[in-house]
Length: 325
Image 1 (cartoon, rainbow, N blue to C red):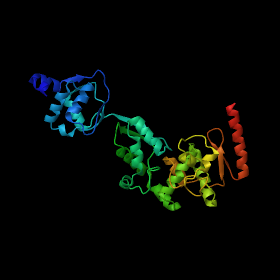
Image 2: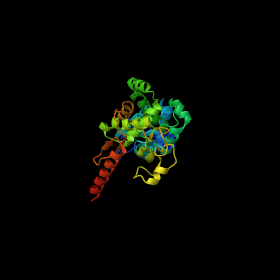
Image 3: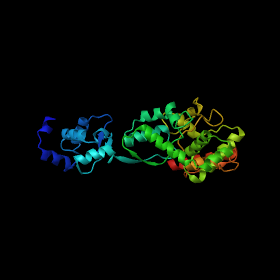
Image 4: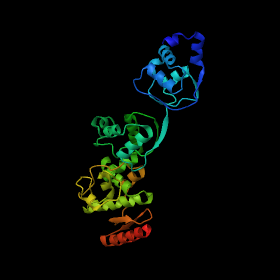
């Protein structure tokens, strides 16, 4: 403070209004609850202002001083101290990053993605996704947000609060469920949770848009006949180190999500399905297929009975063997 008082009025005005050149432009993070002196020191260390103590005094005297926002900022290469104060009060120049959440992403993978891209605490994301109070605030009646976050590309502020990010992803999910889709659920006698669970299995099974409704039809046929779904993606969901090649011992895991052991749909979604997978679950293709196996080209070969399926499996194994050679 003494150093600031020693400066003349002309010098003070020059430091306050003159643009300061930033030769090493880089993001500056202002933590929540930081004092004006701490903010000034961070800005000076980041070469955004030339004198951190003067910044603290100017901010305190400014009508905006009490409204400076936390966040990660990327200021222009040349900016005056006065404009820095105004920018911090308005939240301007906060670093924003485009983040793409792919269709079929699980909560675990979304949490890891948000941490890698935005430095958002992944443990916090997971905890919030299972917190009853947060779920109630979003009006989600399920026990977790798995399946209720919409895969899309989002522009998110670096270091944003996990609550805001999850709320935005869920809000996008709510908007994606059109009145037509909600009416179709009622027509089929399916709850939203059941629909998302089926859609997540479809999403996990195939990335080919042309196959989704057919895959959904296979599982609908199995449900109608009281067969176990035997869906590999439900096993991938419960193994701790997946996804990987499944082993026979994985199929014996005692979990309600293990559709090789338990009939019917699993307790909930196993990922966050995209809109096309949701539509496939609501408009499954009507056919007689009960089985399918990879065809070696990224698609699947569908069969009506076990005998046909066995032939298809042998053919796939032959293709695999050729591909390894």
